Length: 134
Image 1 (cartoon, rainbow, N blue to C red):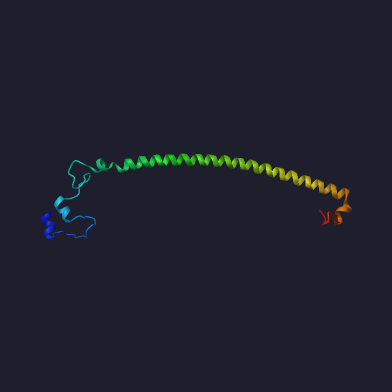
Image 2 (image 1 turned 45 degrees about the horizontal axis):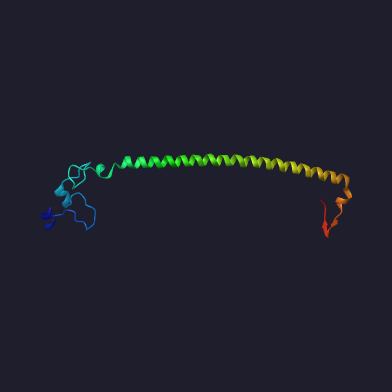
């Protein structure tokens, strides 16, 4: 390898710090990449032995995170549905109260017009303020 480097036999010269490519001095000396082995460390160590299986570590971690997120979101959806039900009940009660109050107001107006037609048609003075028709 030193001979090839000293003789400048690198077929694809790259600047220092660049990525090593096929056909460079290292690949000429070490040979082609072999699947499942770590270049430069011999036949013993494999990528999964050194760094763990990316797919199994990543998927297990991702599965745990995904399950936690799904459970949290399901709880949040359940809580929001309960809150919506309470708000719907409150809204129905408010509508019923509004209908009842409008009915009572209508009854009071009819009663007032029937029993006090003249008083309601003329402006009245009350504590210095003028009130018109109701």
